[in-house]
Image 1: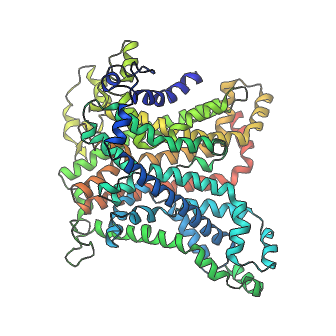
Image 2 (image 1 turned 180 degrees about the vertical axis):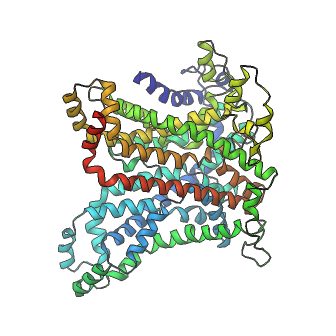
Image 3 (image 1 turned 135 degrees about the vertical axis):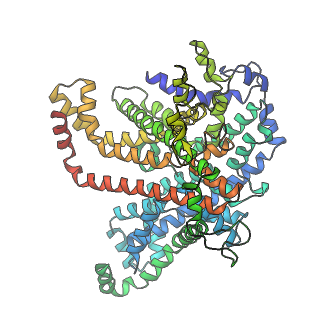
Length: 263
Length: 362
């Protein structure tokens, strides 16, 4: 029973991998077969030679790297400040962050477009990256983690005269690796798979990411007819990085509930 | 706050500059949140009560305040806008009605299964069930489009057991309509055809999800069950030993053990999964966008996609923003409901085992 269910979950991925190596005709006529009658790399060749796929991949890599680095840094800084540093308005800011956790992503489509247009960031890398650089959920996870580290750890460094930044950077941050890994996974996966924000933050074809580009490929002219191997190849390729990340951090993801929240 | 201030003062020299560092540390997150979340939401609210048509800035002096006109157009005024909104609500309602119970039941079932100590290769099964949750919606939709072709893999399997599968993605027939048509009921009785709500007749409200929507329902269950399985799994592992103990003392069989002991203990997680599911499934956007909008017959249209289409394609920004705010308020209410339920449960947590056992006995 369980094996059957596992097959139901895995089979679609196996079929899409094998489908991407089939000819157009075979993919349509014999979609179930796991081993193509004739193995062809035509779909992959077309993706790389005759489509903007490499450009989309480049944009996605650039954005994902920036967003992930930014989130790890900004979320941990904010989490540290909320957990450790005393300043006026701290409680208000924290309550604000909790409130923001409940703003549904989909209603932000129009607002994000409006503000990017207003401040002149629409259709730029900046407009695609900056709004994603910090998330309330990330700040919250980091704050909770810093709360669990005893304050006495910092005392020694404090007495040695280490400033706030130094204590954060060399004492507390290295201890926060588990939480940082969580933020890293969530940010990478979230920004790699992000679609809505990239739909509303740019219009130039040169700024297409993998998600936007491949979505166009599915509904646009390239998707007409029986080009399933091409689409499947694109789907397979764009899944590889998150799959690799997933398998590297599998144990961590499976053992924590934080990893379960989707970006 | 008062205590924090006191400690700052008492700390003296060694804590000097801490407030400044605090502001500095939190500045990037706060600025991004204010500029790209708080201000935009206010700006969008202005658009929802204005007649902005998409040209120049929504703040330019030629844009007028129109009150609730945009809200009225989609809710009370007869017309296409109202009908589209009504249909999108109907479609999403059936989506939620099927997705939430199915994903909850399936993820709970999977969690209980992979949590069994005797199961070999638990890691493999967990990976298999969770993997669809990490891949992008774009990739999954492509795979599902391929699987559910008229001549696709799903229909090939159905043919093998003697069923002629439908042309999934192109079939706008509501499944309840399809069901009653078996009994010859293809035209609506007058009392269902005449009345209605939000510009959609009762007969249409009762159509059920379309065949095409069923594919998206399968897709949602496929991609979310793994995530929710992990939530259940975490809960199961934290109460694992107690279950075994209680069941041992009762001499309960597996079914009785599940319904009388495990399930009551999972109640807090169950509520979390149900509300997260509710919140998530009222926001379906990606899949609809990738499939190119509300086709076939508009039966895939959801409020989340409609707000995008109204604004970015039909350039009726006011109406799009109005839909966004209706959805916003609705989802916030669901979120508050979740908070309220969880706060209600939280103090009981310590006594959860006792409550569960009591519940099992009664």
